Length: 304
Image 1 (cartoon, one colour):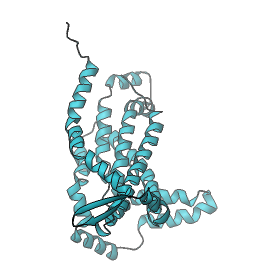
Image 2 (spheres, helix red, strand yellow; image 1 turned 120 degrees about the vertical axis):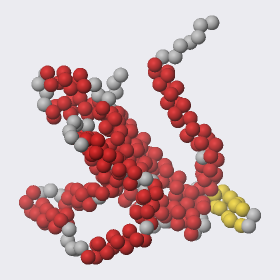
Image 3 (tube, one colour; image 1 turned 30 degrees about the vertical axis):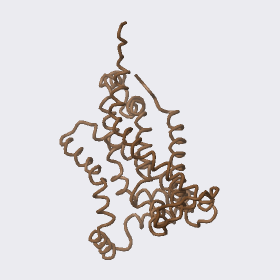
């Protein structure tokens, strides 16, 4: 019997499975049982006593309560989805163009790359916790806001453009509202774009220089090189970065829905309702990822 040889694609697949094997084992050993228990709690009324938990089936009452009785959850969910759309789009665009600049050859490129990589370190769990929970930083922030001018540059520009847009340009004020939301959240966008910059930069560095050389010989401009070579070759990474950005946004420490779920679970001790809220939130996130992935995959260019 001859041994069956494994091709290059098979070796790459095997390497990939070995790479994610620790996560698969950890998920099966430590995550499957809590997920099943949480789903069971979301469909039950949980009574807590000295003997432990007792579950009583309640015919999807917790889910009906979330959508029809709770006054905050629907509003929080729609607000969070709206913020996710424009914040994720801004993060992807910002990350792509920063990676485009960092891919160019110039003096001090290593230093500039290190500066942008600091966003990955600064957005780590420990420092984010310090940023949102440190009383000293919060007090310093309030002091700066109180001592500073009440009218920032963006607020002045917003007043000028919004007041003139309806009468002169005819542009809807909603457009300006979204644009200024993005401008005001530049810090958050930069903090959330570290991983995406690295992903885009690694994809750009894998593009063969011969493609750009051939384009130069054909007389292509840099703008044409961007849209004819760079964007198609890194288009699969747009899908990866989009999924990562969505998940990262919905798991942020200042997420109002996550705060509500924790409040219902820890303070109100309503484990059934909090589990239902968590599963609804999880289902909405998965649905958004599936729809956006389906749309983006239609315009992604895959190459060998």
